[in-house]
Image 1: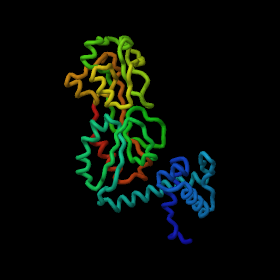
Image 2: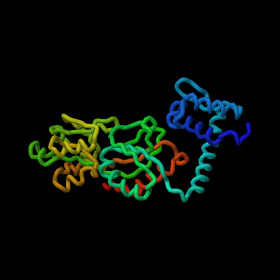
Image 3: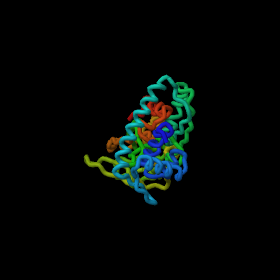
Image 4: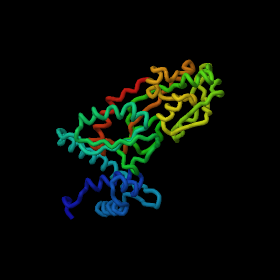
Length: 302
């Protein structure tokens, strides 16, 4: 078989995905292929090269020495190929569908208001936006970009920081009139402290006392996995909550919420990232355009 009859770049792409995603099934989902097709393609590549690239097991793959060397070279070749294609298509406008998953507060305050401007700049892109505070699997949900707040767990996802915001404890005037205003962190033990109930939420509220950082455990009679829902029930006077400043800035200005215990606020910042699969060499122009736009236009403030 001549080299012209072999899609070598396609084979490299599949092999690199197998390595980076940790298996044939994961690569198959990302590439919209069957696991058997991916396995056969890698086997064909090994046969053509005359070398075993991976040792297979039921749960994982392990690169051989030859596989590691081929992976590093394949990554460089694909990067060079992508650079060449971007250079040749520099005048072509990004186009196609971008599926983005964002938490509700970020979606309401930043993403949705920016959609008209983005689509005016890129009329050939179609946005598919899903707002949820639940952490999703990007491959399973066929999602290009997800917005995540807080500390990121180690994963194969690539993260791009969009901004960060300060946190603060807030309560509604009606609640404070009914239950009193906490003056020191210890007073929180006598208050209905509401919190977010999802896997990435921190367990306590950081406070400064005597120059030392402490963690106060919020105890309350309600929790929610939706940040905007938490804001609404706090505005409604159910209890206190510790929230991102950008979520409550308008409520504070309008008098619907009051900042509390600011003298004990450690000033910690919550980062917001856009996460996606694959390094730059695998990033479609339409996804890159969205990431660049958000990085330039999102201004969270502290």
